[in-house]
Amino acid sequence: MTFDSLVERVGVLPWFDLATVLQLSGEPRATALNQLSRFARAGKIVPLRRGMYVLAERYRRTAVQPAALANALYRPSYLSGAWALSFYGLIPEGAPVFTSVTTRSPKRFENAFGEFEYRNVKRPLFFGSTFVRIGGEQALVAAPEKALVDLWHLSRGEWTEARMREMRPAQNERLDPAKLESLVLRLGSPRISRAFAMWSRVVAEDGEGEVTL
Image 1: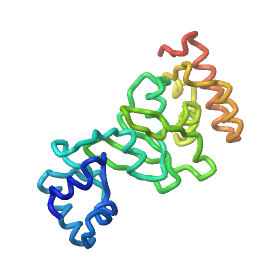
Image 2: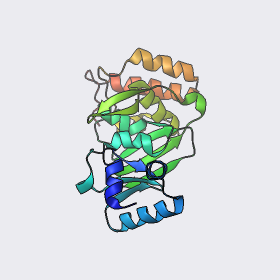
Image 3: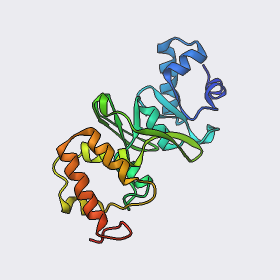
Image 4: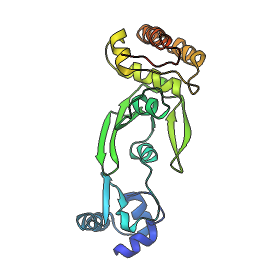
C-alpha cells in the first residue's frame, strides 16, 4: 500500500482506523500496521488513538470536527458534563476538555484535536442524548438537562452553595426547569435532588440566571 493509494481510499473520510484500511486495501494486518507506522513517522498521518488516524492537514479533504471525533474515539459515548453545559451557554467558561459519558471503562485521550475524557455511568443512566449539528457535522450530545445531571452525578461530594456558585450556572431558553426536575425525580438520588435544589436557589438569585460571585 503506497501513501497515494491510502489517500485515494480514505481521503474523503474525516478519520479512519486500521479495520477500514484492512478492508479497503486487502493488506495483511502486520504489513498495514508497519506501513501506517512509517506514514506516521513521516508526518503524513496523525495518530488519534491506538489504531485510529487522520491524514495530515495538507492531504485532508474533509475537516475534522472535534465534537464529532469525541463520539468516534470511544464508543458508545456522548458529550456531556462541563463541555455540553458550556456549549449550551449554561456555564460561562469554555470547557477545554471534551467530556463524555460511556458505559465502558473510563478513558482519556490527547491528540492534535484536543483532550477527550470519558467517564463511566451504569447502563440505566446512559440516555438523554441527541444529535446536534456542530461545524457542519453531527455530534451526539446530552440534552441540557441530562448534561447538568451527569455533571452532578459524576462529580464527587456534595454540591454546596459555594461549589455551585463557583460553577456560575445560568438559566436560558435551552434548559427546561420542569424537564430537569422530572429527570432528577426519575433518578431518585438524594444527593442529586439536593444539588437540584441548590442549583434552583443559586440561579433564582439573579433574575437573568447569572450568579455574581
